[in-house]
Length: 405
Image 1: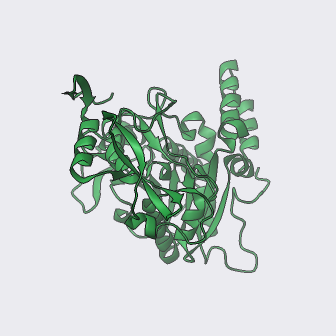
Image 2 (image 1 turned 60 degrees about the horizontal axis):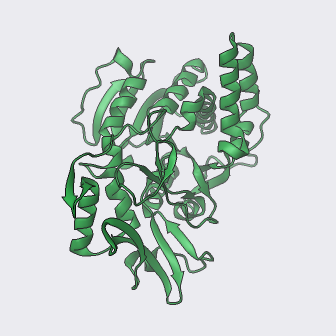
Image 3 (image 1 turned 90 degrees about the vertical axis):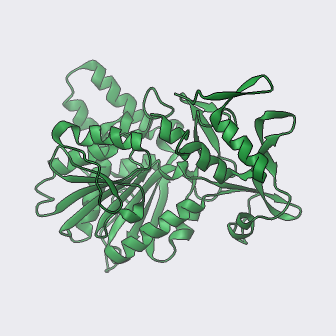
């Protein structure tokens, strides 16, 4: 799937993404890690997300919704429970950021269909924020199937519309700010980890930014360098009380969280963020994945997925006082609080064949085993202050043990 357009450099063939980066660096000097990530992942010509179908067995990563339907079903129950806690508003927008193949939204909509009596009277609509035209096509096939004419829309901000199998309107946007105002439940599952990060190193002279430069020993290779002078990012992005020696900061994630927090504060709703991350403790988490294996981040740019762990302490700081933040808690704890054990028993009881039985247990284990995804993934939520008011606010599903049956 990688870019095959190459050119000769000292007798070697060099892929065009690398050529693009080396000519950029030659012209203007070393680039930030954020700029490197942005180019490699989302460059409109040869960016990894633009060119590849990187999800699932053939791609470079598999996500929780693709491992088990139980995951999406429990998130669906979470969405309905937060809508109920908000007093069952008439309009209910389900918004997913970076929906992958559409598996999560698909599982959630199945739950909505099963809970139709509970959702009675609510005008539910689906809104997907997706930068990749290729993936929006995959999502349309997953969610709308051939029930609908998924048309390219001329409306402001919307580039695709359709109807889901259960008859709900679904729209696609490039940016979260294009999603219509109104009560919304926002979901971001493995969305923030792909946003560009800046990397910083503490030196004797203070914080310095790590940059990507051409290796003087091998002009067709890239390397990391510590930039000698302060940069705008190194002087503005690091809090004065930072204790770590090496820090990664993702300003884009801060901007998006502020937008979500503002909308939740003004219009009600909630956001559920699930990703691998930490609460301000980790240092160097930037890595590449190709064919489910770790891949050198600077090697063959544009042919591998690049990610960094989400710093939830930064998201909390950026959300500010506009909303109530809950978490992060481990995926294991969240799913157990949501009743995954009960759900597994129901599915096993209704299971007719041994291979499905084994698959259910294996996928359950993958999701909650601390050695697998159970502790790597964290759940974090933004809730409106009004939701948490009152003498005894309703407990927030997933973040409190409700003994759900």
